[in-house]
Image 1 (tube, one colour):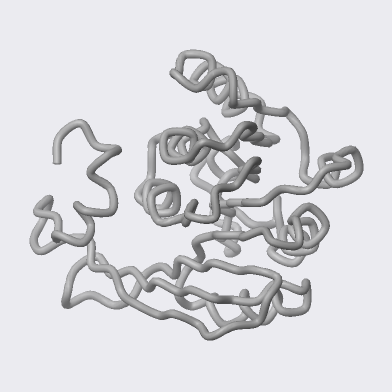
Image 2: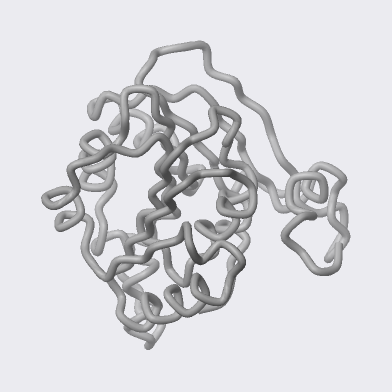
Length: 219
């Protein structure tokens, strides 16, 4: 599958200042976010799970071809299997979840599975994060702006408290399209800001360049 802006944003925006020892990427696709976090952090273990077979195979190939192959591990499994079998918890969990709930088919079963949240409902995702996140851990994700409030409410029911929100706009005149969300176990003051991606078509803002330039060959 193509690399999407959502994945690049989440991989670059997710905080690693707390120096997580281990990281879990839920629904890793072809491994983009896990690879970005390997580049940005010194985590000893970065696990990824991916249920779609073709994406899983590409993820493994990408991990093995990277400079961080010794720290990256991909599992061909569903999240429910991960919760049942995993005994340890993670200091950072990240997920770019499927969220196209309208059920519209693109004609590509693999792509539809990755994009429609009937394959991973938000409440199931958050319940699993609650079980897999360490007491001092952080969980980050990206959702459509229209689902921001409902997602935060569901997270609160799963003992996850929002502490940072970055709302993303394509350009200065467009509506907010996405919400980058960071959660922890502790209720605290929420930091809110905004990120605009482009000044003009393919002309990126300084904020976006600062956030993502380490991951583009040309920027």
